[in-house]
Image 1 (cartoon, rainbow, N blue to C red):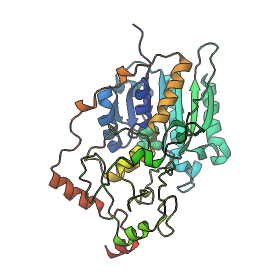
Image 2 (tube, helix red, strand yellow):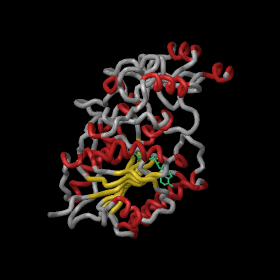
Image 3 (cartoon, protein in one colour):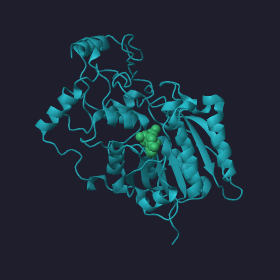
Image 4 (cartoon, helix red, strand yellow):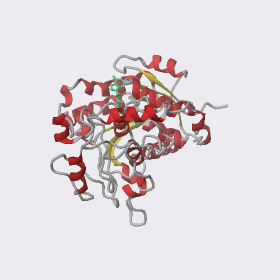
Amino acid sequence: MTRKPTGIELFAGCGGLSTGFLDAGLYVAAGFELDRRAVDAYDYNHAYRGSRGFVADLNFALGAELLREAGIDEVDFVVGGPPCQPFSIVGKRQGVADDRAALIGHFVRIVEELEPKAFLLENVPNFATIADGAILENAMVEFRRLGYAVDHQIMSAADFGVPQNRKRLIVLGMKLPKGGRLAFPEGPYGRPNRPYRSAAEAISDLPDAGEFGETGIYNHEPTAHSPDMVERLSRLEPGKRERGSFHDRLHPDRPSYTLRAGSGNFSPLRPVHYKHHRVVTVRESARLQGFSDDFIWPDRIPRLQQYRQVGNAVPPPMAKAFAECLAQQMDWTLDVAGCAGNPSTRPPANVLSDDERRALRTSRMRGASLGKAALAAE
Ligand SMILES: C[S@@+](CC[C@H](N)C(=O)[O-])C[C@H]1O[C@@H](n2cnc3c(N)ncnc32)[C@H](O)[C@@H]1O
């Protein structure tokens, strides 16, 4: 029997890339990630599909150690999105001066150690211009030295049916079969006969989150805004920005603004619902990022982390298109049923009583986008 194509995800976060690859039918054995709360979400949402999450500092972990933990002898593909904060135009432009830029080098090192047949590296578009493009160019030179055919492109998640304007730089590398040609997938959306998916298409069927989020829908809890903020948001038109707080309001008929991971403050990083006078819930964010409702963040993972993990993720439908494209070029067979798993075999995500959850939600809401006046009064 031939071995099924097997991969691992580096810098996995909650595993948006792994989700898309598994959805396509390519087996991802494990995700490696520094933050244990992201590993928790990874494991909760992938272990039932045969893929385990592991805490690892990829500054130090050796490729051989990763294989041992994953319980495999070799990998066919490696995927990953080393942290993009140093390159994001949203954060401080620290670029090469930031240590995290070195993580790109560790992605290259692990590819060199494991010699996969293919790899995919994801980052923000600005990665291509930082330090006059030197970081990207150095990585490309290294990959070519290792014998890979490589190319990079800036791709839009909206082209793949994700209801969000999200552009990402993707580097693809392959040791192509004879006569093979490296190609990027083409998204079928954004054409006259197939318009982009809109925010309303993605979230309009969800009920309002109510005061405490007691809707029975996982991760659908509201953020508590101050009365002043609610009043300001109620005057904010769809598709517009609130000038004082920088909140952007979704337009129901357009894809969402780019969801971000953020670092400190919670709310302006989340768009405001087009109809309700609050920022979107984690569930709405996950929908706007293309996650299915089977992807659940257990209660024990703090809500700010849940938002961050969503904002960090590669939208699964985009990852799926890349997996299918990769499989086609590498002549790999897809096994959708074999990578599906049964989500109902997971332990319960929420183990708190309604009263406990309500108390926790109320306390977590404190400080979450309360607005300047309320924060000053705290
Ligand atoms: C952009 S996110 C990746 C998201 C992922 N590609 C997805 O689709 O969900 C980058 C991740 O790298 C992790 N990270 C940062 N430094 C790390 C390190 N030294 N070792 C392992 N992971 C690290 C961060 O915690 C973060 O979750």
